[in-house]
Amino acid sequence: MILRNIPSTGETLPIIGLGTWSTFDVTRPADHPPLEQVLQAVVQTAKGALIDSSPMYGRAEEVVGNLTQSCKLNEDFFYATKVWTTGKQEGIQQMESSLKKMRRQEMDLMQIHNLTDWKTHLTTLRDWKEQGKIRYLGVTHYTDSMHPELEKVIMTEKIDFVQFNYSITSRNAEKRLLPAAADKGVATLINRPLGEGTLFTMVRGKALPEWAKDYDIHSWTQFFLKFIASHPAVTCIIPATRKPTHAADNMQAGQGRLPDQTIREKMVTFIESL
Image 1 (tube, rainbow, N blue to C red):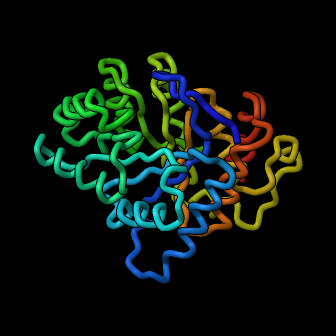
Image 2: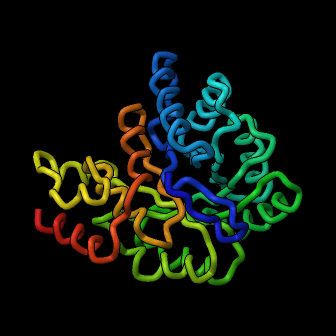
């Protein structure tokens, strides 16, 4: 598995992690075994991979906490979640609840979800980091329109991580946000890497180009994720899935050769020609 540095400390992270939006928000016990297999598929390839959740994601935090403990994988992930409320005390209460749900004494990364009341929460996160309740802090959003606001935070505040959307068909982050993160030494988490499934609609029934194999690309998932991973300012990509076979495919994208800039451009041209 390819590892990338967290700039603020030099600690490394596997370049492919795991998102939990929608996929881990389950209530039936029958839904648990496939998710256990997803977690095991990730750990088998990349022990210490980042797993990202949020109070916004229904029962996802609780399911992550329960399953990682029952599978005895609770020390095998880098745990990230978010604060998603307004008000200082409300934020503290929500974050304490997240720690309990995910069964953590210390959260690896706490992020301010969609920049909600970010100035208030940033003060709390700095206090929590100093107290050892969290190791890293960051901010997130998922739309191109909020990239300027994320850039502003990167340029004016000391943070460890920024999370945002980026894919082969949604490349706005390349203009300013990725360069700004690289310049300021901020780690990047990539959400919506597969366009919430829309990318697969584009390539349905299409064969991979032969030259993709030269970069250890053997599926469309790997094609899309390797495009992102090949950007030097990308720290970690967090595709979400509830299917073990998809999780294994995702993790394969973090191994082997990566495209250079010439091939990255060729990949974009190929997809735009479909």
